[in-house]
Amino acid sequence: MKYLKNTWYVAAWAHEVSGDQLLSRTLLNVAVVIFRRSDGSPAVVADSCPHRFAPLHLGRIVGDNIECGYHGLQFDGDGNCVHNPHGAGVIPKGCSIAAFPAVEKHGVLWIWPGDKERADPQLIPDFSYLVEPGRKTVFGKRHMKAHFELITDNLMDASHTQFVHKDLLGSDAFARSRHEVIQEAEAVHSNYVFPDSEIPEAYKAYFDDPTLRVDYSVNFRWLAPALVRNSVSLIPLGKTAAEGILRTGTHLMTPETELTSHYFFCHTRNFKLDDEAVDERIRWWQKTGLAEQDGPMIEAVQKNMGIADLDSLNPVLFSIDSAAVRVRRLHAKMIADEEKDSTARVIPIAAKADHP
Ligand code: FES
Ligand SMILES: [Fe+2]
Image 1 (cartoon, rainbow, N blue to C red):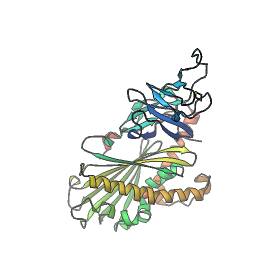
Image 2 (cartoon, protein in one colour):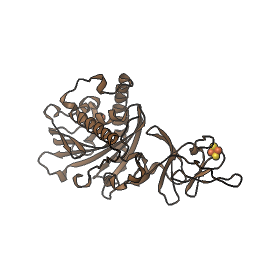
Image 3 (cartoon, helix red, strand yellow):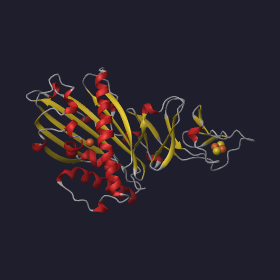
Image 4 (cartoon, protein in one colour):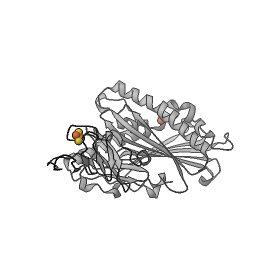
């Protein structure tokens, strides 16, 4: 399986693993178990005991370690066997399991599959807005039977919204929409403007007057390996940005296997923070728009493509594909650079400054 190694991937939302819970999940083709040490720090180790290969998620946490449920060997969060309850307690050489460096930041548990000594948490892009005071985030996820790059393609090309999500996001300004693609260091932006638009159905409930005309803009920013931020603003005509609404979607994809992925998504808003009805409305969008509209289309595309990669099928490309193609090229170049020179490192740009 080919993927960028010296970069941070999402293993789970932070709230998915709490207390003495053991979460089993396959990430980057490796079955792992995710747990927290006694100080709360996350650990991600292979979910297979080197003794008789029992899945460690059937065990339990003892202090900072995970205990195998079969014969009680204990492993620390770095994968070292630290306790053998049998005989004299000798721990044979090689009695260890693989472990990923893991960090919790901004409500996300991250793992680094590359060189351990380079696993610098400073390289995690700034997603602090997910947990910042003054904003509210609603989290979700979906398992996808598709290569993770097909999910990125779908996000970087918002033209599909007029078809896949016509009932929810369709705009009467679609024909006069403008699209620009900007590459800035190692970020790719795909920005759309729908001037003088109706309020798309999915957003009507957020306005006191849903018949208002708005300037509607939808911006996507990609960072390696598959971290996409989507800022949507709707500003009533003649009003200032502060009088409009801003909703930020965050879409983080991690390969599970060659052709399946974990799709983590969440939505952050700056309005009606304590309104449970708005939370519910966002959950409804995640279920309807992402899980039931995007999900089946992307999976059907993967099914038709089989195991072939996109380029080998010579797809007919249009200008609507320009951002997705740019991302694919940049991502492929990063992987090629890393293969040529294992010291190559991806340095994501700081996201903070340009967050709306
Ligand atoms: S299989 Fe884990 S201790 Fe035996
Ligand atoms: Fe979509």
